[in-house]
Length: 141
Image 1 (spheres, rainbow, N blue to C red):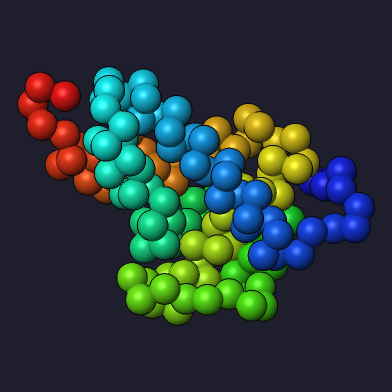
Image 2: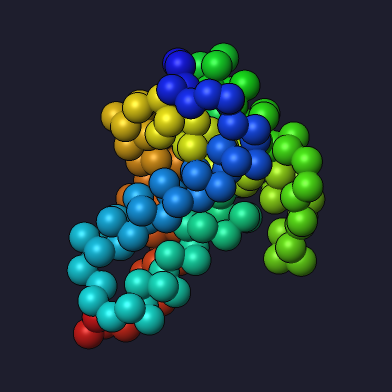
């Protein structure tokens, strides 16, 4: 996998981009889920984008990753200058940062199909994030 950017982005920069890539994937999934109000969509998105959820999502795809993809994950996980929020442990937050860096690297490499495959495996329909999404909805949507 080759990143078409020079100089090569560091882990924090890849995570910054990966955060946006994941946000778009989450928003697309939620929009197609039938939710229609911005408040419900935003609440549901939290079940995908919080560090604890991304750390768990990484666990679901770790065995699928190629060596080079794991290298990008580690680059993000080990990035310097990261402030850890109170809502997650240091391990969870670093794993989430690595997860985001992986998606940022895949995006820069033009690996859009791989991004979709990994996103679907990380957040399977009916999985933990989907269950949390359903809790935020009322029956009338």
